[in-house]
Image (cartoon, rainbow, N blue to C red; front, side, top):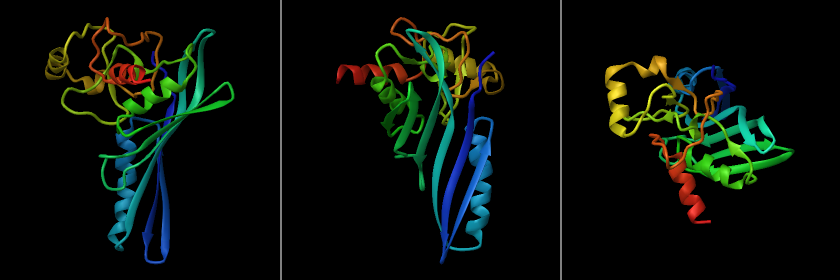
Length: 211
């Protein structure tokens, strides 16, 4: 059974004349549903005035770490702005481990480069252990939503074509969808020895090579 240990929050300030509306929405589910709910509130306000919409997205929760002393679960926060689009969200991830705050930075709305940057800053014996870093955590071959991956721990994926076949023949959105920071006991770290349709290990390898 996977551990779903995130709750999702959207906040925004909408300026309308001399007034500023502060709104928020939260849901314990995949992030796209939070955004839909949140957007309905924001759009109703904007219909009544010519306002400027600036959305700050925040996800708070916990993430497992694998350390030399075993698994531990720590607080994590993911923050970024996308007032106009997801083209340049400037993602920031903050993690608290052993009383020390670690921060990762990136510009990928799927958080891949940010998580890789965060991993580089953690102690050498500490690894992020979640669906995004797991060999079974695959992306959608037809396009991605933030905070959404597809678990293939019960089958072997050897290429993008395998993922295409999976999506063409089944409904993975219902059966396999997981959040990027979910975790289960079947976790196995990504490596060159096993194909995963996911860019995390590639991003991490690039950062390690450029260190």
